[in-house]
Amino acid sequence: MKGELRGLFVLWQREMLRYARNRTRIVTSLFQPLLFLVIFGSGLRQSLSGQGVGGDFLRFMYPGIVAMGIMGMAMTSAISVVWDREFGFLKEILVAPVSRTTIALGKAVGGTSTALVQAVLLLVLAPFIGIRLTPGHLAALLGLGAMLSFAVSGLGLLIASRMRSVESFGLVMQFVLFPMFFLSGAFFPLQRAPVWMQLLTRVNPLAYGVDAFRGVLLGAHSPALVQSIPLNVAWLVGFSCLFMTLAVWQFQRMD
Amino acid sequence: MTSIPLGDGAARHGDGSTLAPVIAVERLVKDYGSIRAVDDVSFAVRQGEIFGFLGPNGAGKTTTISILCTLLRPTSGQVRVGGHDVTRDRNRVRHSIGLVFQEPALDLKLTAEENLYLHARLYGVTGSEYARRLREVLELVELWDRRRDKVETYSGGMKRRLEIARGLIHYPKVLFLDEPTLGLDPQTRNHLWAYVLRLKQEKEMTIFLTTHYMNEAEYCDRIGVIDHGRLVTLDTPARLKEGVGGDVILLRSRSPADAVIRELGQKLGLRAAADGDAVRLEIQDADRRVPEIVRALSVGVDAIEVRKPTLEDVFLKLTGHALRDVPGSGERVSPMVRAMRGHR
Image 1 (cartoon, rainbow over the protein chains, first blue to last red):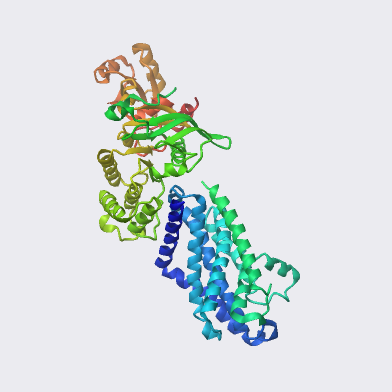
Image 2: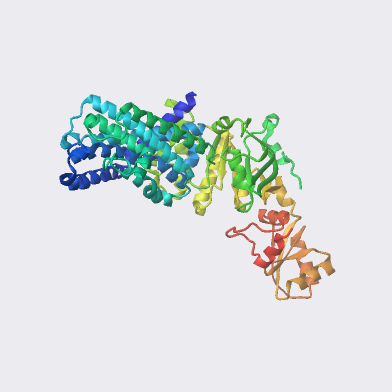
């Protein structure tokens, strides 16, 4: 057990070292959420602000952008397992005296940590959007962010364990990440969306993350998916358990 | 042909003779679907031995090494490494082995020191013990001065050396080297072998390696020759070469090879075979018998080559075919002949 905890810590340390080492990644991963915020936010602000989004459109979008940033980071961290396989390092980990469960958890905990750093960097913008951040807000957001990124890491690891080549990374972005972004409620309120879309958003972990973030940052007056943070938490924990269990199961079968 | 698990070669390692073998493999089989990659292989490796697996690509070398290292599960058979079963006691086995893979397995974005740090921590080597060993292994492979550089700036040879250092830092009982010199230039290759031999001498480490380079196999204390998943033979390089049946003679003539072969058989009772554009035979005391052979032949002889048997000859003799894609080996076998030899 002590060996496994030590292994978990080492794997987490590696993710942190790599993150700190790669400044371009930090900048580029901030770029996408900011691009959405600046272009969609500013562009649609005049036309869309009002009752439907609970007031100012930029304020409506901002919590979703933070959640999206967290998800993007967690997903790319998890998918990096495929790069580890391509460049051989995965073998070094697979023959190390730690269990496959620990390997998957270490990767998820590492991805979650980098995602939370990402969240903090994005939350710095809050005052400019006109949102007041209290320490309580920050604590709640980091807790929720951890659950969201753990769920997404699980999904990412599950995908990565089935992926055989780095080339398919683009496919994952197109078919998983972007649909999850767009169907998360980050860009438009979901209540008035068509029924089929509403059903899809119900199985999207990011939707609950966005919902919870909005609940914390904007209060109850914004349009919401489930209107209750404990319910969001329950969904996120559920997704985390499901995806991590499947990911660990796949890791154990990996040669 | 059945192999004797502990050939005479092991006896040279004197006092270790009563110790249990470091690696014990019994009736190992590995199937991939309907393909049998490893077919009923048994052998044992003693402590302090350099043990080589020699065979062409696809013979089952890497599959076997992967099973020994817990990366693959055997289909059947028993494998113990460092006294632990590779399927039931994986973590214990993992603690007792060091690995240098065919393909580099380093984190290129990190420095050499960071790579070693993470590895040492994973294996529970910490504190002042870690600091001492870090210096020791990096000095052994002459990378101490470059330890703060990112691995992506390293050359192929340096990466391989760093991997060796990493494989050693947790003081494994057995070091596995899977085609350790593949893709390295000859100079780096010699360098690397100097390290391996030093390890054997200074640390009495057991080294298990796979190779398809004949000249590398010469460094081994014992060699297992593997072909089509089967262990064909197992012995010291010297004894394997003795088994070829004397020296090798290659005759070149303008006359058709089968005419030369027929004549050698009829007049001298020698068994010869075509080998590319030459005729090849193996006899004792070849130096003295060359004049006799040349005199006996009615066909003109253009060139004649006499040499001591190499492991390449051993392989050819045992398997009926040459090691494939071996750069710079003496073998020149036409595709046709190779195809015919392939039928067994």
